[in-house]
Image (cartoon, helix red, strand yellow):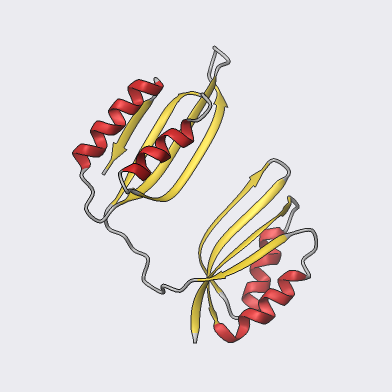
Length: 169
């Protein structure tokens, strides 16, 4: 019986890590369905949704354990739903970097009982001024999202934080 698992791998960045991990998954008839992979500093992190025969998980975990210098974890998904949410909105935040921006926007979303499907942040130098610019993109969902309420709350937060916040449907 096939099930879905989340496989996460964190360790020193090196060439070939994605190839190595995906080969191990393939060797146990696993299929990578969704993935997020990124280099952060000197480390590389992989998070993948894998569909695999339940009988192969123990062997997969054992072989992955032989992959030295990496922290590896496997979590079985109990809910095998299709994972498609039609009520997705995207929030873009841009402005001068200040401590606590991620907390403030995610806390506001939590208070509105809004689920974060995906979150990406970045910092880069502003052209000419040298200030640090912060950007955040969040995909959010809620089964009965009150768009007007969200827009009002984000406008208030944008004014308070002196940033720009745009919501896409």
